[in-house]
Image 1 (cartoon, rainbow, N blue to C red):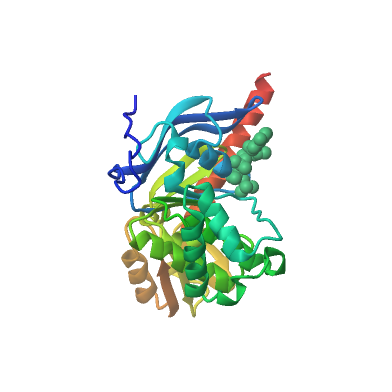
Image 2: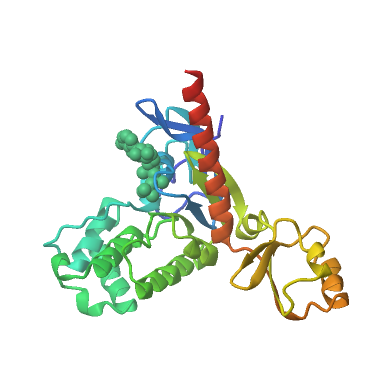
Length: 329
Ligand SMILES: Nc1ncnc2c1ncn2[C@@H]1O[C@H](COP(=O)(O)OP(=O)(O)OP(=O)(O)O)[C@@H](O)[C@H]1O
């Protein structure tokens, strides 16, 4: 049983931050007989920027909503900022759902203050902070504009400010980058970093891996409702062997016997995974047999490659299991 951290008795005395801002153990959420979340264990360290990566339909939104207490799990336990009843911590959490929505007739600063008020922030203070947030982020001209007059990206930024205006200790963002252009994506990355510098924990979901690679200390890769990987970005990248790309002047020779068996020829270059014994034995053969090395690169796979391999393998395994099940039925 997970122990409870008492909710703060006064707004001026925040409860101490537990080691993990968010925890889930054995979480299961089913819709009919479909398991959208299928036995998830997750622990988000306090103060971390943590990414949940997964393809469409992987269960990211359902997992976030379960952790936040918006839906109850069928099995398992969760703890949010130390509380086993997550909704008790609502005033200390900021949540940007995947479906965005603001009242079109509301002015931008009022919309932000309104969202803050829903999380316990007095309206007057919310209005003051809303104006400051918009001004500080180069959106001063939008302060008194109704939402319907804002571009989609600006409206999304307004909603984001509404998510953080009450200065939460935990910010949960569901696909926050979708719908933003490259400039606004960069601004959002900067804002996430700024919040993290203040000690805020950030948990966000994405299927665009580059953001997670730049931002996250830790990531979880989810596919088919299960966590397939949980660790640092570097650990995920280390799941795959570095890739070698070699271009030679000679097209044939004894040196070709030194190429690994899985070597592929593509666009005039040899491609293969770095062998366990390293590149040196091959280099020796290339030099001794005068293959003429025109270019040679050894590249560590990025998080994107690791994601495709881990999630792809999980999906392939799931499809095989389902086929086996059908065959047995
Ligand atoms: N209320 C619901 N009723 C029935 N099925 C649902 C419900 N909510 C989600 N699902 C199903 O659960 C699975 C996981 O959905 P979820 O939205 O959590 O995934 P996701 O990883 O956030 O996907 P996306 O990136 O496409 O938003 C999907 O197959 C979805 O159809």
